[in-house]
Image (cartoon, rainbow, N blue to C red; front, side, top):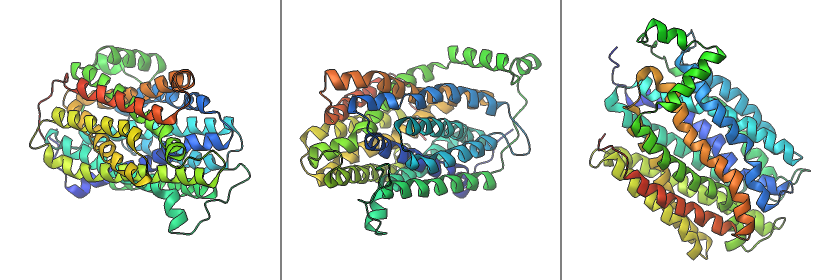
Length: 434
């Protein structure tokens, strides 16, 4: 079938749930390391406490992608997975700030990350499902804008609650997790569920085209053996462009995970010169959230610009320049002494993240068979999960033995990784414009 061009409002509707998904994900990234430290974790143990979540994503992404490719019913093709993931994520977000022990926080992070993965993969597949090829870049730019908005709100929420709504940042629960963190997570739970529901209610999916042969259809039935065989086959036969983009994704997301793990605490230690348990430390963590909100703001602004820039120069060139800006921004923390100057570094990170949320997917989408869109988007998202696993497994040792538990140097390592990703982008064979 020939898919009609969609209006801006229709594209907004099919992407709205990503605002909530990234509100929840932003809360997780901005606050989990601090929550672990509130509950008594040592700095070199924090990376390993993140491990269960990406390991789950490693399994969930291709399975959900395969299942959504082969699902069709009254609820649609991708929408059942949005809704199921939203319910689980909402529950995890509600209970996260009520944790009283490290194992509880790690378990809920596992549930949250798995649930976000259930929703995220099908959302990435929905753009090529619903849009004609000439609107792919526009669709992913819309997604990037909503992801940015969710990131801004999540990162700034503790600061907003304290300075706009007057919630006392020093008041804590019995577990020493600040009350403003608790309220931030509960706000995120509402936003997550409502925005997913928006997409479910306003979007009518097209029925899948019956383009598989009878034998192929039989091989792809949703039994465990057929599912595993199909996933392994597709992983071994990825499109060439996807293989090249995989290395770009691995190094760029490794950089971001280093930032998410260490940046707020690096701000508290380096700029605020504070130790855990002091009021200054909480102020530093809050300012780290403000910095994340700033990079989210720059991310959102550049996402608007991307649609116009992509008409002038190739997507590959845009991605190279953007990642280079992000890498230099992270390395720049070595030279910053005041909290206001930290915000300028976030400009480069925001530019990089805007491109990361749109250009790789736009470059990839036209090389994937339509009936395999879900599973290949799920496999592609593994290259976000794999660097998280690598950082979780290996960076604790690096932090302890080479970086002397310096969160600042942890952020700098992320910057170097993103610069490597920028130059790997030049290997991608894509010269298309929007």
